Image (tube, rainbow, N blue to C red; front, side):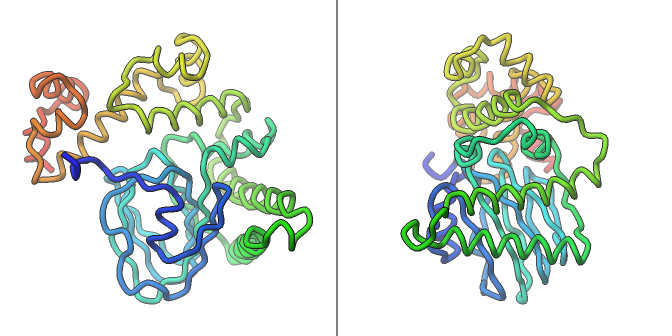
Amino acid sequence: MKNSSIIKHTISEIIKIVGDSDQGDGLHVHISHNKFEKIPLGYPFRSDGYSLVLLLSGTFKLQLNLIPHTLLKNEVIIVKPQAVAQILEMSPKLSIISISFTVDFILKNGFRKEDFDAFDFFTASNIPKLKLTGKEMDSTVSIAKTLERYHRFSLEKLPYKEELVHSSFKLLLYQYGSIYKREFPNLEANLSRQEALMLRFLDLLNENFKSERTVQFYADVLCITSGYLSKVLKEVSGKTANQLIDEAVILEAKLLLNKPTLSIAEIAEELQFSDQSFFGKFFKKHTGLSPTAFRKAH
């Protein structure tokens, strides 16, 4: 069963795979031009962080949670840590900027309520790609390059490095948030504590959903009551904790069912169901199809 799980890479591991040097601190800025002769990550994987992917030229096709997306010049998309990503195609003349960062990097940098209000895309259930204007592209690329330059300096060589990195990073997110708000003006802002709790829950869920499926487990780790956790998650995402837990299990099951080398019994074991029958009933309850029927249909 070692090869049955969806591989989870840390940002550091992805950096190594694409041939970059690790910039540390849970933040990495990748800027490349015509660098890749072949797809560096051609299999489904999860990351432990967020990534803002901005296309400067060429075509970049990727799949997020089984949904294909094609990025063209001046388009940007955010990849969340709980999403299963797979790079499907990269054009030969590809120029791309990717800013990757962990949940811990966000939380340890003291974001204020106003910041979380601007960054709704952290917890939005469906984040489409966005098309930037020429001026927006110029400013976004400029900020990204500034952030990369500051982040690569050592503390000894750059006084106030942490402040410069933090300010540049926040400016970049406000730039993206501004465009996002323009395209989706009816989004409601959420309280910073609710946003932070949602982020922590999603991070925990991504790590534990196979073995821990009770709301009480996540509430205990977060040092809150299960009722309060579900209340906050419902307000922020529109879904209860139980719904989000079940969705994580079902998504993983669908991804594993797309691997023809795995039997239904092996998938049930990987997802830590007591037996194949229990897994089948759970899957059919949430999808309307048996695992076998889903596999045939897809």
